[in-house]
Length: 492
Image 1 (cartoon, rainbow, N blue to C red):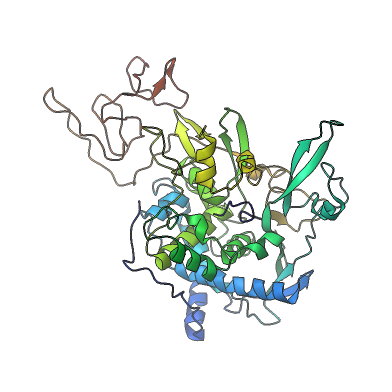
Image 2 (cartoon, rainbow, N blue to C red):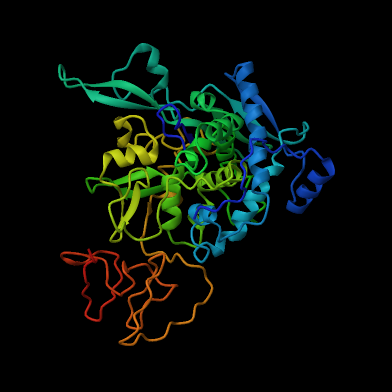
């Protein structure tokens, strides 16, 4: 399932690969021999899929889905190459290369497999069943609040989430607004029909990739925040790619069963009031946070659909817009050294606690939302029907993989993940009275007696070995960097 972030305004270091941006979008390689060579290399039938069904879809909607699939292949072509594990986009969405080594092969194989999923298959090819009728809506359940009769078909749907308000006259809840939640959702099936994709209204409201690119390049100056904001490039092809990742046949064979299902992962994060929230790892903010602050050898990023889809979108957008759309950023340093600028990031690590900024206006700007209502993060909150991943062979009353699957429990983010390459680094010499350790440019240092080392956790703010701590001492998750376990406060 893919979140619909357009109607609410929630759409989705800098290295310039192309000095002059161009609007000429790449075309799909139609050379049959080249395609067969690609498929042979990956052990995939070059005529992989065909679309069937189309319940509830108009002719124009069928056309929109088919055009979006061309963009899926275009995004696949952009990442059909060996991954540069040290590139900014790679580290943003897949984490440190010394943390994701175990799953680098799987990530690489999944990305290279995208371009083989061409929708020109024969009658014997794998089939994807397309629908536009919201067939998994729980129509047998009551609405969570009072709503207008014309809105009743939005109740208990993956496509919509309600905003409730208590009516002071009778103390009952009214649904005052329906917020688009999913642009599409997918069920993976275990037969020649490899999956069912349902396209929600939010998908058809999203721009094509061509339109999104043209608008971003024409409306925003090169190097500007908006030009480098990844959400401005999100498009129907990106939504469709996210859904493709939920089909089990997509990763299973090419990863040699290392990845058998790609989820919509959840993360635990503190809101501005300090309360723990469970949020879907959707969009650049939360996918980057999960990549930077989870351990596990790359397992979580390799099995979260939006980390893979955001990465493909970022690589494609970089190649067309002339620079990596790095915004919004989730910095690697363990806490802001000064008050963050508006729009820079909305997720940060405060002494080992991963939090949202306690600043409403900054969250609005960083996430690209247009209404303070969305600060409640309704589109991202985990819960029943919150996931675009409808699981395997799901039925309307079947288990929800976002809530009932033990393999997809909400992930505890940790702030002490090593962020450096796995290349061994010699220990620096002991500092003398006349020589002080140099201040690292990325604040990535150690607090041992021997001084700061490049490959250790970030715990210094000024190049010395002072810990980050609160007035009461070392914070939870803080490295113990003094012999007696005490800490020194950050310099002001």
